[in-house]
Image (cartoon, rainbow, N blue to C red; front, side, top):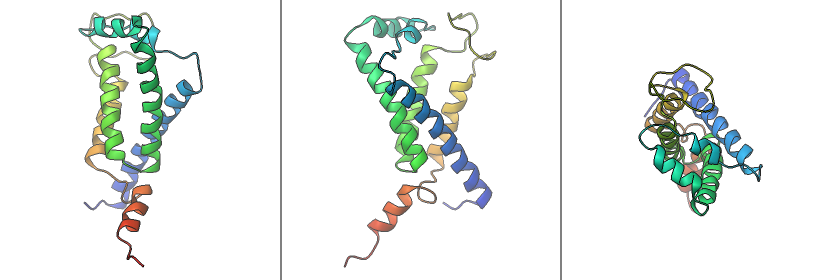
Length: 160
């Protein structure tokens, strides 16, 4: 697949900015030993509220979810920034964002303990970022700008 310079630049900038967002969010959680998703999960709404509340109140499951969330964000972010396996990272990021959206859907009539930083009706920033990851998934740029480019060249280099 060929891209014009401006299309490639736009896609790479999108990949890098989402990567930075994921990496930073992940590292903040990884570096804070007292961080937990419990309050966020208890504040869930929508038709899956009971599942997220069960996770928050389960002392065996919650630490596993917290670990997977913090390190998942970090690894996905690093992968997107590095341009290494970003199709897999994009897919994993979409799954993670879908779980965030299902926990806190922007549906009319659902009120949350913590106010969001905007007014939303069905589409919110989480869903927009999920769709942006779908664009990255659909139009990968790693083989142009990223570590995968070097891996591809190393794999096809003549053996000595």
